[in-house]
Image 1 (cartoon, rainbow, N blue to C red):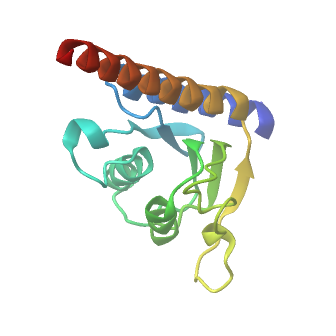
Image 2 (cartoon, rainbow, N blue to C red; image 1 turned 180 degrees about the horizontal axis):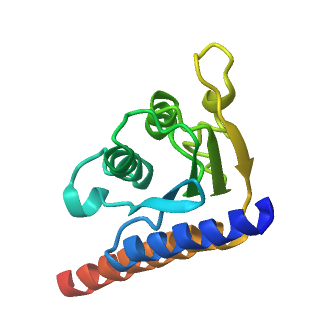
Length: 167
């Protein structure tokens, strides 16, 4: 399997995690960490479920991977995530020394890999990551677009029902 095929395969697993989040009513973001060709951690967003701001898919996967490896240094790993990491997750990626990050869709409002900032390639830090973007990006982006469209429609319906009940 070449890099592109591997990236697509593992991103597919991250998408499966994102679908788990979506089934829980969470923003559909999933992450997978691979070490020596094997998945050692999988996670999905759980912020709404846990009511905890740090239960992003990437952070949960990093925490689990550290336990599996037995070290805070995640050298020789690849992180696959469906959405460009936010500043918090980008910081955790740098701190855990993940050497390679592959993501699907850009996050123009909070992305800190390419969109707003380039934290993972900033030479001022003592660690930089190789980044590959856009792997299954259309599918990753569609998951998010469809989720937020459905959420807006649900809120719109609830508002309309509340207005009708008030009349």
